[in-house]
Amino acid sequence: MNSRRRFIKHAAVGSAMALSLPDIVAAAIPNNIAKVRLRQEATILFQGDSITDAGRNRDIKEPNNSSALGRGYAFLAAAELLHNFASLKLNIHNRGISGNKVYQLAERWEEDCLKIKPDVLSILIGVNDYWHKRNGNYDGTVATYRNDYMALIERTKKALPNVTLIICEPFAIPGTKAVDNTWFPEFNEYQTAAREVADRFDAVFIPFQSVFDKAMEKAPGDYWAPDGVHPSIAGAQLMATTWMQIVAR
Amino acid sequence: MNSRRRFIKHAAVGSAMALSLPDIVAAAIPNNIAKVRLRQEATILFQGDSITDAGRNRDIKEPNNSSALGRGYAFLAAAELLHNFASLKLNIHNRGISGNKVYQLAERWEEDCLKIKPDVLSILIGVNDYWHKRNGNYDGTVATYRNDYMALIERTKKALPNVTLIICEPFAIPGTKAVDNTWFPEFNEYQTAAREVADRFDAVFIPFQSVFDKAMEKAPGDYWAPDGVHPSIAGAQLMATTWMQIVAR
Image (tube, rainbow over all chains, first blue to last red; front, side, top):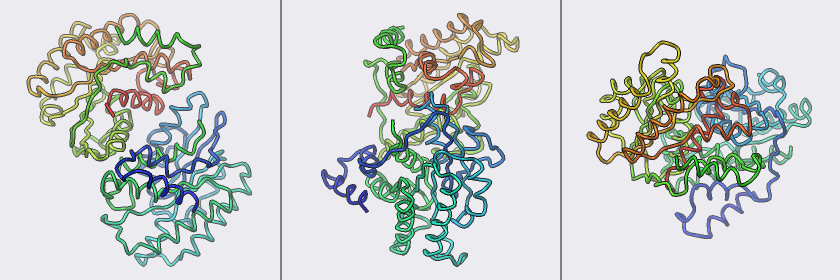
């Protein structure tokens, strides 16, 4: 909870509108975080559900291909990475698949993660684990989510002991087409579970919920994600800008 | 030529590798440039050829749609604009079409520009005007390019007297699949013509050739544009980052 407390303290310094969006993003990421250092020719893999997938062409397996990276935060972060760190010759993949929950990542993990041997692995998963249960289409609970997620990362660390892990907080924006206040506090338990996974495995944790919460001071929730789950272009850029904050320059 | 001279002066201050990519981008844009100020609900239109098109879905006409914006610099700049200026509620369109030369913009200008009534119009056109002539597939010359471009902007200014114009320098990167040194100095004449159009109509001019030339100190030409004409993801981000420099914060 350290980063959230720090964030709230930062936000309280001025009036709400005194913070610009870059300030908001910076304030959500603690200063004392261990930043990700990228090595020459590092392989970076984005994993997750539809938010990561974002309409990517799943037939293309080569890195740094714009169709294969989709139209979401993974593509936008990849563009900044490939631009800002041109001399490193990075290899960036996206293997997000729409609708996925943690157990579905596990089913395809050998092919879609371990074989790719990422140096940096960024995962955003959890909104469907809650949403599909809520809709009556899935009988997993928050305990299922936590246990499956812990097992997935344990397996990953065993296969790739030197991997740098980034766990992204699942988020939901109330007052939108698909999300209202009845998502909370139950959905918060999934967010806490994701943070516990990050803490247990010494991963970098990206607090996306705080970032979206603060962004709503600039524009309403549906500006950032019309249905409360899938980001608009602006929301995807907000995520990419936040993601870039955890990379050492 | 003022901005190029200034750029060379900047670059000469340190050794080549002392400039980071953001420095390179900033140095290519003169400090005293009149920056573009965006008003509430402004409509921004990106126009041009394949570099602007970048695989966009041409059936979608609504603004701020990620499929309709393509996978190139226009999408990446749109993402930054929609994120950085969330409270403005901008409307961003892409109407680039692969293969276009200036006269082909003119043919579809009523529908694909004037009817959209942009407040800010950004045009990148010219590489095909030279390339197709060079290949023997087009008999227009640099005079055709200059005259057609002048006429197009005159017509635009008449229909939209308050439009803010951005003219992007066409660029080509030698030592790549499709471009070698025999493109120059003839291709430079097209770049000079684009600058003359910008000067005559008081448009902002974006010197993309200088930006790509300097970026080659970080990574080889084909890293930024494999065929020397169509940017990679990194090249597209380089363009978007440069484009964003001319917008007032």
